[in-house]
Image 1 (cartoon, one colour):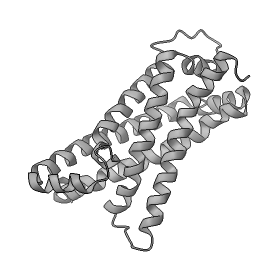
Image 2: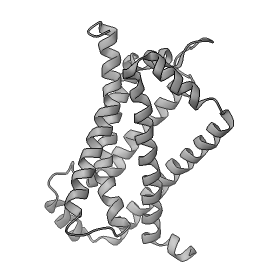
Image 3: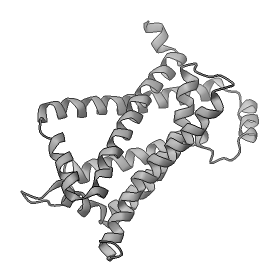
Length: 221
């Protein structure tokens, strides 16, 4: 077991498992945040329900932290192993076969680092209140709207969300490949589903800072 997990294949499996856990969390997180569009009260009820059991919330947060750190760790290890094992000529042939140097699989580490910065700012804004002073009694929806309307946060959230979608485009397909769930009949549908999921999650999260900006400008109410 230890040898398997220490091998490149084992590290790919662990990266896929942690990635799947993060994808499921992101889907759930977007679903909850979409309540903003149903009204401030709906979002406040959702936020208060999440914080009703602080001990359980801390356990979930620690679990997410372990998933996130583990995914980054195994992604870096797998990337290094590939670079060591891959001859230069093979790398050049592969680069020619890809549709673009910006194809998702070519910039997974880069997009992952962008997402990491996005997540750190998100935690600083909404979990630890490091950048915005929020007084007692301020409702979660009001706090969230304040953050979304901040120029720095809004810009980073928008770009980070698009990079998240781009990252997931390749990650979803790679997940099935790593688990060996490839089949000529199903793989094209897996690719389409991955693109659809990437668009929904990327555009879904990117819509929040746009919504906040439109509210600030008085375009919508």
